[in-house]
Length: 437
Image 1 (cartoon, rainbow, N blue to C red):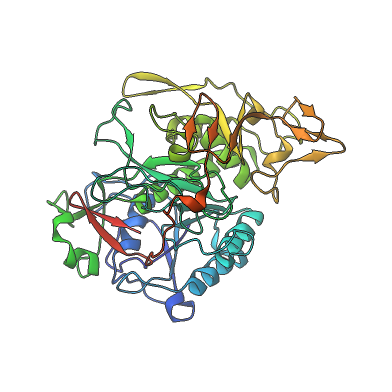
Image 2 (image 1 turned 120 degrees about the vertical axis):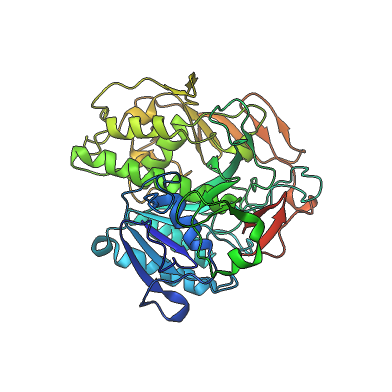
């Protein structure tokens, strides 16, 4: 896994394997360090072995190797060009460094359409080359004082069509899903300029504990985040979509490993479809807030392990049967079984076949045209020049209204909620927690 962030501490011993390159200073390999602290915390959420906490705080994929590409300085600031260079480096060295996932827990304002945004296009190239790119949605989902929801706060490169853009969930620190809510700060869609549907999924992102360097800027500036010793090194609590993204990245790494038992590997589009199909929809949250729902690690791993990526295009590719539900905290929860593809919600069992939509170099949301037909799995619906895949998400000229399967979005220009300033890695105080941008 490649993590593009502020570095990782040389004293942080909870990672099985770390390779370090410093793009703040030209992309050179160097000794591990993290004088900001954000990258170490993110790395721990993804891949901590739990050694220094005596097993209390283990990452989602504790056996995964980490390639840290440092782009943020001691204040959490950095240049877009360094991030682009790091992404391009990951693509060029994908095989040598065994990179299957890139985590981007950072972002900046959307200044232009995705088609001309250099950062978005770097992400798109990475996905086209078979790397799953997971991006934090941003922390502009509501008013900091009142927590009233706000829309169109997704940051770049969270507006990349092929990225897996992740919002944050407040789990109330319980195992049950019944009390979970989307965090007030989690950025909602649609994306600025293009009106893309984002985020794709949401994941736990509030009050998450991980390691942090004791001499880092975050640790020394915000002592309230320190949690009493659970081991040999204090843990640190942070909240934000920056924390939700590595939860998903660690899950994706485990999914890719599970799929390799068949001799192949899942494409980024297939990974996103599996995450969405197995997600658990959250009551009271619209698609622009939660995407397809909250990620379901058990379901996603089960479906990924059942799929044979080497099956021919159009063929059924489940090697074993799956039950579309997962038991969590004693409750059997049905999978959402929906895929948000562009401006459409796709229902049905398309994920059970090796559909052309899951192939490499198919842009998420584009229509897949074969001859004069648009094909999804074994079914085709064609109405003149209009493809009908399921419920539509329409950005119209009226205010936001929510129906059973339909979302209508009004004129973005009149909302006055365009993000105007985001600093890479900037921190905002909220409810005693840190919200890393």
